[in-house]
Length: 453
Image (cartoon, rainbow, N blue to C red):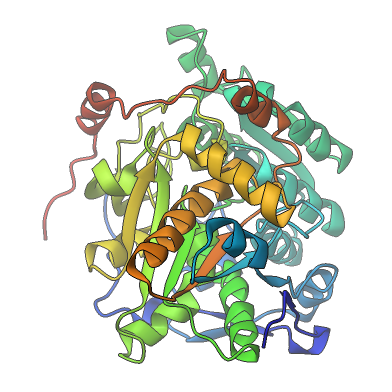
Protein backbone atom coordinates (compact mmCIF):
# COMPACT_ATOMS: atom_id res chain seq x y z
CA UNK A 1 0.00 0.00 0.00
CA UNK A 2 1.52 3.34 -1.08
CA UNK A 3 -0.23 5.52 1.49
CA UNK A 4 1.40 8.81 2.45
CA UNK A 5 -0.59 9.19 5.69
CA UNK A 6 -1.50 6.08 7.66
CA UNK A 7 -4.32 6.77 10.07
CA UNK A 8 -6.02 4.95 12.91
CA UNK A 9 -9.62 5.67 13.84
CA UNK A 10 -10.53 6.96 17.29
CA UNK A 11 -11.84 3.49 18.13
CA UNK A 12 -8.45 1.98 17.25
CA UNK A 13 -6.57 4.09 19.79
CA UNK A 14 -4.85 1.81 22.35
CA UNK A 15 -6.63 1.67 25.71
CA UNK A 16 -3.65 0.40 27.72
CA UNK A 17 0.00 1.34 28.18
CA UNK A 18 2.65 -1.34 27.66
CA UNK A 19 4.96 -2.04 30.63
CA UNK A 20 8.35 -3.45 29.60
CA UNK A 21 9.56 -4.22 33.15
CA UNK A 22 8.30 -7.83 33.31
CA UNK A 23 9.72 -8.53 29.83
CA UNK A 24 13.29 -7.35 30.51
CA UNK A 25 15.89 -10.15 30.11
CA UNK A 26 17.28 -9.28 33.58
CA UNK A 27 15.59 -7.22 36.33
CA UNK A 28 16.05 -3.47 36.40
CA UNK A 29 18.32 -2.32 39.27
CA UNK A 30 16.31 -0.82 42.15
CA UNK A 31 15.87 2.88 42.81
CA UNK A 32 17.74 3.98 45.91
CA UNK A 33 16.67 6.49 48.56
CA UNK A 34 18.90 9.60 48.26
CA UNK A 35 19.52 9.61 52.00
CA UNK A 36 19.78 5.99 53.10
CA UNK A 37 20.97 4.65 49.71
CA UNK A 38 18.70 1.67 50.30
CA UNK A 39 16.18 0.31 47.74
CA UNK A 40 13.06 2.42 47.99
CA UNK A 41 9.83 3.43 46.35
CA UNK A 42 9.76 6.99 45.09
CA UNK A 43 9.65 9.43 48.01
CA UNK A 44 5.93 9.55 49.01
CA UNK A 45 5.76 13.35 49.36
CA UNK A 46 6.69 13.75 45.69
CA UNK A 47 4.26 11.55 43.76
CA UNK A 48 0.69 10.27 44.15
CA UNK A 49 0.36 6.59 45.05
CA UNK A 50 -1.01 5.60 41.63
CA UNK A 51 2.21 6.88 40.05
CA UNK A 52 4.31 5.05 42.65
CA UNK A 53 2.44 1.84 41.84
CA UNK A 54 3.03 2.26 38.10
CA UNK A 55 6.75 2.97 38.61
CA UNK A 56 7.30 -0.56 39.93
CA UNK A 57 4.40 -2.46 38.39
CA UNK A 58 4.90 -6.01 37.08
CA UNK A 59 1.72 -5.94 35.00
CA UNK A 60 2.35 -6.23 31.25
CA UNK A 61 -0.38 -3.70 30.43
CA UNK A 62 -1.94 -0.92 32.51
CA UNK A 63 -5.35 0.43 31.53
CA UNK A 64 -5.51 4.08 30.48
CA UNK A 65 -8.23 5.80 32.59
CA UNK A 66 -11.27 6.83 30.58
CA UNK A 67 -10.81 10.49 31.60
CA UNK A 68 -7.28 10.39 30.16
CA UNK A 69 -8.43 8.61 27.01
CA UNK A 70 -11.05 11.31 26.45
CA UNK A 71 -8.39 14.04 26.49
CA UNK A 72 -5.99 11.98 24.36
CA UNK A 73 -8.66 11.81 21.67
CA UNK A 74 -8.28 15.56 21.13
CA UNK A 75 -5.19 14.67 19.06
CA UNK A 76 -4.70 10.89 19.18
CA UNK A 77 -4.21 8.61 17.38
CA UNK A 78 -1.40 10.64 15.82
CA UNK A 79 -0.54 10.17 12.12
CA UNK A 80 2.20 7.98 10.70
CA UNK A 81 3.62 9.33 7.43
CA UNK A 82 5.54 7.70 4.60
CA UNK A 83 8.31 10.19 3.69
CA UNK A 84 8.07 9.76 -0.08
CA UNK A 85 9.48 13.23 -0.80
CA UNK A 86 12.47 12.71 1.48
CA UNK A 87 13.12 9.30 -0.10
CA UNK A 88 13.10 10.95 -3.54
CA UNK A 89 15.40 13.76 -2.41
CA UNK A 90 17.88 11.18 -1.08
CA UNK A 91 17.42 8.86 -4.08
CA UNK A 92 17.32 5.95 -1.65
CA UNK A 93 15.63 2.56 -1.94
CA UNK A 94 14.82 2.76 1.79
CA UNK A 95 11.24 3.16 2.92
CA UNK A 96 11.13 5.98 5.49
CA UNK A 97 8.23 6.47 7.90
CA UNK A 98 7.82 8.97 10.71
CA UNK A 99 5.37 9.01 13.61
CA UNK A 100 4.44 12.66 14.17
CA UNK A 101 3.66 13.77 17.73
CA UNK A 102 3.67 17.48 16.84
CA UNK A 103 -0.11 17.46 16.33
CA UNK A 104 -0.83 17.63 20.08
CA UNK A 105 -2.02 21.00 21.49
CA UNK A 106 1.40 21.47 23.10
CA UNK A 107 3.17 20.47 19.88
CA UNK A 108 5.00 17.38 21.16
CA UNK A 109 4.73 13.92 22.71
CA UNK A 110 4.89 15.30 26.25
CA UNK A 111 1.11 15.54 26.91
CA UNK A 112 0.93 11.72 26.80
CA UNK A 113 2.33 11.67 30.33
CA UNK A 114 1.43 15.22 31.44
CA UNK A 115 -2.29 14.54 31.15
CA UNK A 116 -1.93 11.20 32.94
CA UNK A 117 0.12 12.67 35.79
CA UNK A 118 -2.28 15.60 36.22
CA UNK A 119 -5.19 13.15 36.35
CA UNK A 120 -3.64 10.95 39.06
CA UNK A 121 -2.67 14.00 41.11
CA UNK A 122 -6.20 15.40 40.84
CA UNK A 123 -7.55 12.06 42.03
CA UNK A 124 -5.39 12.26 45.17
CA UNK A 125 -6.34 15.87 45.91
CA UNK A 126 -3.14 17.63 44.83
CA UNK A 127 -3.66 21.39 44.51
CA UNK A 128 -0.35 22.35 42.93
CA UNK A 129 2.38 20.73 40.81
CA UNK A 130 6.00 21.78 40.33
CA UNK A 131 8.31 20.69 37.55
CA UNK A 132 11.38 21.53 35.49
CA UNK A 133 11.64 22.02 31.76
CA UNK A 134 14.54 22.28 29.31
CA UNK A 135 13.40 23.46 25.89
CA UNK A 136 9.91 24.08 27.26
CA UNK A 137 8.12 21.12 25.67
CA UNK A 138 7.51 19.38 28.99
CA UNK A 139 6.61 22.57 30.83
CA UNK A 140 4.10 23.42 28.11
CA UNK A 141 2.52 19.98 28.31
CA UNK A 142 2.22 19.99 32.10
CA UNK A 143 0.79 23.51 32.07
CA UNK A 144 -1.86 22.23 29.66
CA UNK A 145 -2.55 19.11 31.72
CA UNK A 146 -2.85 21.09 34.95
CA UNK A 147 -5.21 23.55 33.26
CA UNK A 148 -7.48 20.70 32.20
CA UNK A 149 -7.74 19.33 35.75
CA UNK A 150 -7.75 22.62 37.66
CA UNK A 151 -4.30 22.30 39.28
CA UNK A 152 -1.81 25.15 39.82
CA UNK A 153 1.50 24.72 37.98
CA UNK A 154 4.98 26.14 38.73
CA UNK A 155 7.71 25.56 36.13
CA UNK A 156 11.45 25.99 36.65
CA UNK A 157 12.78 26.50 33.12
CA UNK A 158 16.51 26.07 32.39
CA UNK A 159 17.79 29.63 32.09
CA UNK A 160 19.46 29.32 28.69
CA UNK A 161 16.20 28.01 27.18
CA UNK A 162 14.08 30.55 29.11
CA UNK A 163 15.79 33.28 27.10
CA UNK A 164 16.35 31.31 23.86
CA UNK A 165 12.70 30.24 23.65
CA UNK A 166 10.44 33.00 25.08
CA UNK A 167 7.37 31.75 23.23
CA UNK A 168 7.51 28.47 25.15
CA UNK A 169 7.31 30.50 28.36
CA UNK A 170 4.40 32.52 26.99
CA UNK A 171 2.65 29.29 25.99
CA UNK A 172 2.92 27.99 29.57
CA UNK A 173 1.72 31.27 31.01
CA UNK A 174 -1.22 31.32 28.59
CA UNK A 175 -2.34 28.01 30.12
CA UNK A 176 -1.99 29.54 33.59
CA UNK A 177 1.43 28.31 34.76
CA UNK A 178 4.00 30.40 36.62
CA UNK A 179 7.43 30.15 34.96
CA UNK A 180 10.80 31.23 36.36
CA UNK A 181 14.33 30.87 34.92
CA UNK A 182 16.45 28.26 36.70
CA UNK A 183 18.58 28.68 38.73
CA UNK A 184 16.15 31.08 40.43
CA UNK A 185 15.94 33.04 43.65
CA UNK A 186 12.78 31.14 44.63
CA UNK A 187 14.64 28.19 46.21
CA UNK A 188 17.62 27.63 48.49
CA UNK A 189 19.44 25.53 45.87
CA UNK A 190 18.85 28.20 43.22
CA UNK A 191 20.13 31.00 45.44
CA UNK A 192 23.22 28.97 46.35
CA UNK A 193 24.10 28.27 42.71
CA UNK A 194 23.56 31.90 41.70
CA UNK A 195 25.84 33.00 44.52
CA UNK A 196 28.56 30.65 43.28
CA UNK A 197 27.98 31.46 39.59
CA UNK A 198 25.71 34.46 38.84
CA UNK A 199 26.00 33.74 35.09
CA UNK A 200 24.95 30.07 35.31
CA UNK A 201 23.08 28.88 32.20
CA UNK A 202 21.31 26.32 34.35
CA UNK A 203 20.74 22.62 33.67
CA UNK A 204 17.92 20.15 33.90
CA UNK A 205 19.58 18.71 37.02
CA UNK A 206 19.45 22.12 38.73
CA UNK A 207 15.87 22.78 37.62
CA UNK A 208 14.79 19.36 38.94
CA UNK A 209 16.38 20.18 42.32
CA UNK A 210 14.48 23.46 42.49
CA UNK A 211 11.16 21.84 41.60
CA UNK A 212 11.68 19.06 44.16
CA UNK A 213 12.67 21.53 46.91
CA UNK A 214 9.55 23.56 46.15
CA UNK A 215 7.35 20.45 46.34
CA UNK A 216 8.89 19.32 49.63
CA UNK A 217 8.28 22.75 51.15
CA UNK A 218 4.56 22.96 50.35
CA UNK A 219 2.06 20.49 51.79
CA UNK A 220 -0.45 20.90 48.96
CA UNK A 221 2.19 20.36 46.24
CA UNK A 222 3.61 17.38 44.42
CA UNK A 223 6.25 17.03 41.74
CA UNK A 224 5.81 15.88 38.12
CA UNK A 225 8.67 14.67 35.94
CA UNK A 226 8.69 14.69 32.16
CA UNK A 227 11.20 11.95 31.37
CA UNK A 228 13.57 9.30 32.82
CA UNK A 229 11.18 7.68 35.34
CA UNK A 230 9.62 4.29 34.55
CA UNK A 231 6.06 5.62 34.74
CA UNK A 232 6.83 8.37 32.21
CA UNK A 233 8.19 5.85 29.70
CA UNK A 234 5.11 3.72 30.38
CA UNK A 235 2.71 6.55 29.47
CA UNK A 236 4.62 7.25 26.27
CA UNK A 237 4.23 3.68 24.96
CA UNK A 238 0.94 4.70 23.38
CA UNK A 239 3.19 6.07 20.60
CA UNK A 240 4.70 2.67 19.84
CA UNK A 241 1.44 0.80 20.32
CA UNK A 242 -0.19 3.00 17.68
CA UNK A 243 2.84 2.75 15.40
CA UNK A 244 2.69 -1.06 15.39
CA UNK A 245 -0.94 -0.98 14.30
CA UNK A 246 -0.17 1.58 11.58
CA UNK A 247 2.80 -0.35 10.21
CA UNK A 248 0.61 -3.47 10.09
CA UNK A 249 -1.87 -1.55 7.91
CA UNK A 250 0.81 -1.15 5.22
CA UNK A 251 2.11 -4.67 5.71
CA UNK A 252 5.56 -3.64 6.94
CA UNK A 253 7.72 -4.03 10.03
CA UNK A 254 10.64 -1.64 10.64
CA UNK A 255 14.20 -2.82 10.19
CA UNK A 256 15.55 0.29 11.94
CA UNK A 257 13.85 2.54 14.50
CA UNK A 258 15.52 5.89 15.24
CA UNK A 259 14.81 8.58 17.82
CA UNK A 260 16.46 11.36 19.79
CA UNK A 261 17.17 10.93 23.49
CA UNK A 262 17.45 13.41 26.33
CA UNK A 263 16.12 11.50 29.30
CA UNK A 264 14.73 9.00 26.79
CA UNK A 265 10.94 9.03 27.17
CA UNK A 266 9.84 9.95 23.65
CA UNK A 267 12.00 7.36 21.94
CA UNK A 268 11.38 4.68 24.54
CA UNK A 269 7.66 5.30 24.06
CA UNK A 270 8.16 4.49 20.40
CA UNK A 271 10.48 1.49 20.57
CA UNK A 272 9.46 -0.38 23.74
CA UNK A 273 6.42 -2.04 22.15
CA UNK A 274 8.74 -3.17 19.32
CA UNK A 275 11.68 -4.26 21.50
CA UNK A 276 9.36 -6.76 23.11
CA UNK A 277 9.48 -8.65 19.79
CA UNK A 278 13.28 -8.46 19.75
CA UNK A 279 13.56 -9.74 23.32
CA UNK A 280 11.21 -12.63 22.56
CA UNK A 281 13.15 -13.55 19.39
CA UNK A 282 10.48 -12.55 16.88
CA UNK A 283 12.63 -9.83 15.29
CA UNK A 284 16.21 -10.45 16.42
CA UNK A 285 17.79 -8.26 13.73
CA UNK A 286 15.75 -5.14 14.61
CA UNK A 287 18.08 -2.14 15.05
CA UNK A 288 17.10 0.55 17.53
CA UNK A 289 19.30 3.66 17.33
CA UNK A 290 19.29 6.29 20.08
CA UNK A 291 20.65 9.68 19.00
CA UNK A 292 22.10 12.22 21.42
CA UNK A 293 24.03 15.51 21.09
CA UNK A 294 27.82 15.51 21.09
CA UNK A 295 27.61 18.21 23.78
CA UNK A 296 25.88 15.86 26.25
CA UNK A 297 26.67 12.28 25.17
CA UNK A 298 25.55 10.28 28.20
CA UNK A 299 25.27 6.90 26.46
CA UNK A 300 28.24 7.16 24.12
CA UNK A 301 30.71 8.76 26.53
CA UNK A 302 29.15 8.54 29.99
CA UNK A 303 29.54 5.80 32.60
CA UNK A 304 27.00 3.25 33.81
CA UNK A 305 26.80 4.08 37.49
CA UNK A 306 24.58 5.01 40.41
CA UNK A 307 23.79 8.72 40.27
CA UNK A 308 21.27 11.24 41.50
CA UNK A 309 18.55 12.35 39.14
CA UNK A 310 19.15 16.01 40.08
CA UNK A 311 22.02 18.39 40.82
CA UNK A 312 21.40 18.74 44.57
CA UNK A 313 21.05 15.03 45.35
CA UNK A 314 17.40 15.23 46.44
CA UNK A 315 15.97 12.88 43.80
CA UNK A 316 16.27 9.06 43.95
CA UNK A 317 19.62 7.47 43.05
CA UNK A 318 19.32 5.59 39.76
CA UNK A 319 21.54 3.11 37.91
CA UNK A 320 21.99 4.83 34.58
CA UNK A 321 24.44 6.10 32.02
CA UNK A 322 25.49 9.50 33.31
CA UNK A 323 27.89 12.39 32.83
CA UNK A 324 27.56 13.26 36.53
CA UNK A 325 24.63 15.02 38.23
CA UNK A 326 26.60 18.28 38.64
CA UNK A 327 27.51 18.44 34.94
CA UNK A 328 26.18 21.54 33.16
CA UNK A 329 26.19 20.93 29.38
CA UNK A 330 26.99 23.59 26.76
CA UNK A 331 24.03 25.70 25.56
CA UNK A 332 23.04 23.71 22.48
CA UNK A 333 19.68 24.59 20.95
CA UNK A 334 18.28 21.11 21.57
CA UNK A 335 17.46 22.06 25.16
CA UNK A 336 15.41 18.92 25.69
CA UNK A 337 18.52 16.76 25.20
CA UNK A 338 20.74 18.45 27.78
CA UNK A 339 20.08 16.09 30.72
CA UNK A 340 23.11 14.57 32.45
CA UNK A 341 21.77 11.00 32.46
CA UNK A 342 19.48 8.54 30.72
CA UNK A 343 16.38 6.68 31.85
CA UNK A 344 17.22 3.51 33.83
CA UNK A 345 15.17 1.37 31.40
CA UNK A 346 16.99 2.84 28.38
CA UNK A 347 20.37 2.49 30.13
CA UNK A 348 19.59 -1.12 31.06
CA UNK A 349 18.71 -2.00 27.46
CA UNK A 350 21.83 -0.26 26.13
CA UNK A 351 24.02 -2.10 28.63
CA UNK A 352 22.42 -5.36 27.44
CA UNK A 353 23.25 -4.54 23.81
CA UNK A 354 19.62 -4.36 22.73
CA UNK A 355 19.82 -0.75 21.52
CA UNK A 356 22.56 1.30 19.82
CA UNK A 357 23.62 4.90 20.40
CA UNK A 358 25.13 7.65 18.25
CA UNK A 359 26.17 11.20 19.13
CA UNK A 360 25.94 14.01 16.55
CA UNK A 361 26.90 17.70 16.28
CA UNK A 362 24.21 20.37 16.04
CA UNK A 363 25.22 21.95 12.69
CA UNK A 364 24.63 18.72 10.69
CA UNK A 365 21.51 18.19 12.81
CA UNK A 366 20.05 21.50 11.61
CA UNK A 367 21.17 20.70 8.06
CA UNK A 368 19.07 17.53 8.31
CA UNK A 369 16.14 19.44 9.82
CA UNK A 370 16.14 21.90 6.93
CA UNK A 371 16.38 19.08 4.37
CA UNK A 372 13.39 17.40 6.02
CA UNK A 373 11.40 20.67 6.07
CA UNK A 374 12.16 21.28 2.39
CA UNK A 375 10.99 17.82 1.39
CA UNK A 376 8.25 16.87 3.86
CA UNK A 377 7.06 20.38 4.78
CA UNK A 378 7.19 19.88 8.55
CA UNK A 379 9.75 21.97 10.42
CA UNK A 380 10.99 19.57 13.10
CA UNK A 381 12.06 20.46 16.62
CA UNK A 382 15.86 20.59 16.98
CA UNK A 383 15.64 17.55 19.26
CA UNK A 384 13.82 15.48 16.62
CA UNK A 385 16.27 16.64 13.95
CA UNK A 386 18.92 14.53 15.69
CA UNK A 387 16.90 11.45 14.74
CA UNK A 388 16.34 12.75 11.21
CA UNK A 389 20.09 13.26 10.75
CA UNK A 390 20.86 9.61 11.56
CA UNK A 391 17.85 8.38 9.57
CA UNK A 392 19.22 10.22 6.51
CA UNK A 393 22.62 8.59 7.11
CA UNK A 394 21.00 5.15 7.26
CA UNK A 395 18.92 5.81 4.15
CA UNK A 396 22.05 6.86 2.23
CA UNK A 397 23.80 3.70 3.45
CA UNK A 398 20.92 1.72 1.93
CA UNK A 399 21.57 3.53 -1.34
CA UNK A 400 25.26 2.65 -1.27
CA UNK A 401 24.52 -0.98 -0.42
CA UNK A 402 21.63 -1.29 -2.87
CA UNK A 403 19.35 -2.53 -0.10
CA UNK A 404 15.79 -1.53 0.70
CA UNK A 405 15.17 -1.26 4.44
CA UNK A 406 12.21 0.11 6.35
CA UNK A 407 13.18 3.00 8.64
CA UNK A 408 10.84 4.35 11.32
CA UNK A 409 11.55 7.76 12.89
CA UNK A 410 10.13 9.06 16.17
CA UNK A 411 9.34 12.69 15.30
CA UNK A 412 8.60 14.01 18.77
CA UNK A 413 7.53 17.58 17.99
CA UNK A 414 7.51 20.61 15.70
CA UNK A 415 10.02 23.45 15.66
CA UNK A 416 7.60 26.38 15.44
CA UNK A 417 9.04 27.96 18.58
CA UNK A 418 12.64 27.26 17.57
CA UNK A 419 12.93 29.80 14.77
CA UNK A 420 15.75 31.59 16.59
CA UNK A 421 17.81 28.42 16.36
CA UNK A 422 16.96 27.92 12.68
CA UNK A 423 17.84 31.57 12.05
CA UNK A 424 21.29 31.03 13.60
CA UNK A 425 21.81 28.01 11.35
CA UNK A 426 20.55 29.69 8.16
CA UNK A 427 22.66 32.80 8.81
CA UNK A 428 25.80 30.76 9.47
CA UNK A 429 26.09 31.75 13.14
CA UNK A 430 25.43 28.35 14.69
CA UNK A 431 28.35 26.71 16.48
CA UNK A 432 29.15 23.09 17.22
CA UNK A 433 29.94 22.22 20.82
CA UNK A 434 32.36 19.46 21.75
CA UNK A 435 31.95 17.06 24.63
CA UNK A 436 33.70 18.86 27.55
CA UNK A 437 35.74 15.93 28.88
CA UNK A 438 37.32 17.81 31.80
CA UNK A 439 33.96 19.10 33.05
CA UNK A 440 32.53 15.59 32.87
CA UNK A 441 35.53 14.15 34.71
CA UNK A 442 34.97 16.72 37.45
CA UNK A 443 31.26 15.89 37.66
CA UNK A 444 31.85 12.12 37.74
CA UNK A 445 34.05 12.59 40.79
CA UNK A 446 30.91 13.61 42.68
CA UNK A 447 28.97 10.37 42.02
CA UNK A 448 27.32 8.99 45.16
CA UNK A 449 29.16 6.15 46.87
CA UNK A 450 26.78 3.20 46.91
CA UNK A 451 27.94 0.05 48.74
CA UNK A 452 27.99 -3.06 46.54
CA UNK A 453 25.68 -5.83 47.79
